[in-house]
Amino acid sequence: MITDLAGARLKQVRLDKGLSIEEVHKKTKIHLDILKAIEEGGLINFSPVYIKGFLKIYCQFLGVDPKDYVTGFKGTSVTFRAVPPPDNQKETPFLGLSPIRLKSLKPKIKIVYIFIALLITFLFLFKLGKGISARFRSPDIVKPASFVLAKPGDSRMRPASRVPELLPIKAKLKAKDNIAGSLKSFSSLIRLSIHAKEDCWIRVKIDGKIVPSLSLKRGKTETWQAKEKIEFSLGNATAVDIEVNNKLIPSIGRKGQPIKKALVTKEGLISVSR
Image (cartoon, rainbow, N blue to C red; front, side, top):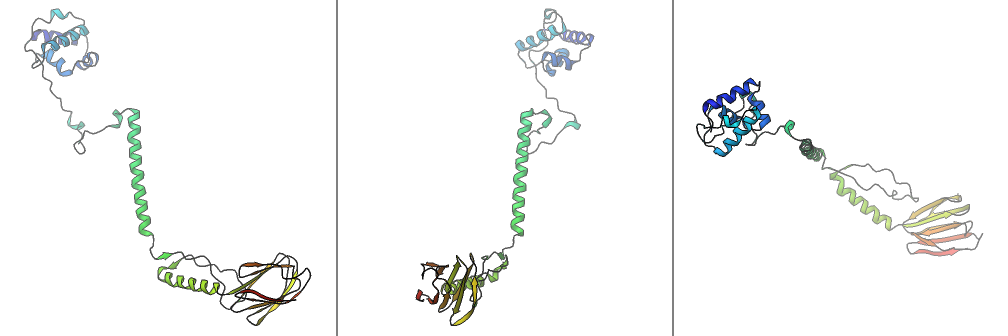
C-alpha cells in the first residue's frame, strides 16, 4: 500500500495541476471522504482490494504511475463519515420524512405531484361548496303543483292563474288538502266541450241557468261544467265536434240540421231533440 508521505505527494500533484478535490470527485466518481483519507492517511475499516482500486483510478487521473505510490499504507480500510449540511441549509422534515424539492425532480414526476395537488384542492373546494350550499338551503320551502282549477260556481273553464313558486312548509298539508278536494270536486262535475268545424250558434243552460247565446267561430272551442245537468242547442248538428265528460260523441244529426235541445248528465248524453 502507499505511505502517508505518498498520500501527501498525490495531494501536491493535484494542487500543482490546479484541481480541487471536488473536481476530482466529479471526474473519478470517488467519494470525497475516500479522496481525503487517501491524501491525509486516514483509511481504516475498508477492504484493501477497494483501496487499491481507488488509488489506481486516482493515480491514472493525475497522470502518475500507481507503482510509485502503492508501496504500503497505514491501515487497510476506510470508514465513511457523514458530513452534515450547514446550519443555513438544514430543512425540518415533515412527519419524519425527508423534504422533497421540486427542483430536484424530473419533469414527469413534477407533473404527477402538481396533478395530485390540484386534485386534492378540487376535492376540498367541492366539499366546501357542498357544505355551504346545504347550510344555506332552507328546509322550510317546498314547490307545490303549478296549476289551479276553475273557481267553484264558474260555468266556463278559465286559464289557471300562476301559482306562487314557493310556499311555507306549514301550508304544505293545507295545500295538499285543497288540491285533493278540488280534484274530487272537479271529477264529480259534468263537462261539455264543443269545437266548431264551421261557424255555428250555440245556446247553453247550466243547472237550469241560461248562459248568453254565442256564435262559435270556426276552429274555436268552448267548455262548460255543471253539477247536475247541461242543456244545449245548436244551429247545425254537423258543424261541431261534441265531447261529454272527456268522451267524444258521434254526430247527433244530419248536415245542416239544427238541434233544439240536448241533455247531458253525469251518465253522459241522455237525449237529443231535433
